[in-house]
Image (cartoon, rainbow, N blue to C red; front, side, top):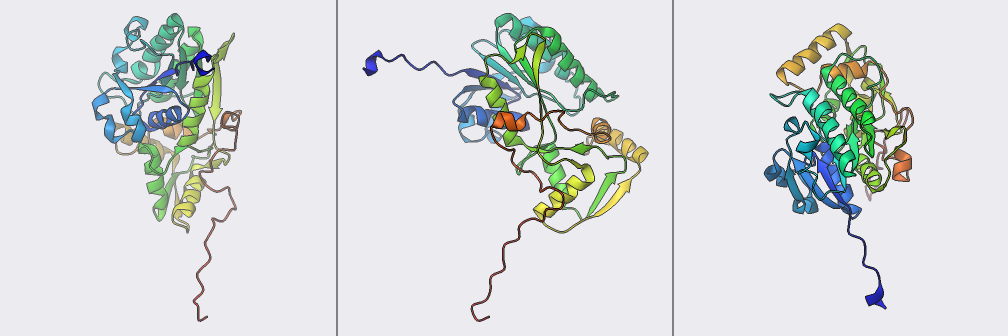
Length: 325
C-alpha cells in the first residue's frame, strides 16, 4: 500500500533577500519551522554564520547586490530554481552606490518584473506611513518602490510593519531598549504620533504564512498587509512602558523642541550616530498605525505583547517570607 502512495510534493523553495538582517533572519527561522526549503540572499553570504540562528546556517546562500540588479534580465539568474521571493532588504542610510532609489525602488521594480515574467511569487516588506506627504529620501524611495510593485502585474504582496522589537534585536530595536533604560528620556516635543510596536518573531511568522499562499494579490494589484501590535503609544509613552518592563521605575522626560529634534535628525544622518533619522522624525509626528491590522488574522492568534498597555502594572513576584517570620 505504501508503495502506491503519491510522494509528498517538494517543499516550496523561498529566497529570502536580506536574510542575514534583522527582519530577514526571523523570516528565515519561521520559514524553516514551516517546512520551506530556504535560501538566503546577501551581499556577503560568507559572513552569515555569526548572524543566522542554528539550522539557518545550513541554508544555501546566494550573493545579491541590489545596487547592480536594476533590470529584470539581471535578476533572472538570481531567481533560478526559486518559487517564492521574499524581499527584506532595506538601508537606513545610503552608502556609495547603495542609494535609496537603487535599493528601495529601482531594484525591487526590476525584481517584480522578473517575477512577473517567470511566474514567481514576491513578498515585499515595506513600511507604514508612506501615504502622507513626505520629504525624507528614505520614505520617498520606499513609496516609489511600492508604486512600482503596483504597476508590475506580478503575483506579489506588500507588507507594512510598524516599529519592530526583539530581546536580541537589530540596530533600531536594540537602541530603543538601551535608551529606555536611561534615567532621562529626551523626546521630540512634536513626536505625538502613536506607534503599535510588534515582536519581530510575529512578523517572521506572518511572512511565512503569506509565502504559502498561491495568490498574493488580486485583479487590482498586490495584496497589502499592514501589521502592528495591540498597544498604540506615542514615543515618550512607549519608552516609559519599555523602561517599566525592563527595569521598573520611571525616567525624567525632557521635551526637545521640534526644530532642534529635526536638526539632530539631520546630524545623525550625516554622521551615522544613531538610528534616529530625518525619516524617523517625519514618521514620529503622525500616527504610524495599521489602518487595518492584519497581524492577528495571519497569526491565527493575538500578537505577542511588546509592552504592557497603559495603566497596567508589570507583574512583581512575591517576596520570600523568612521561615522564622
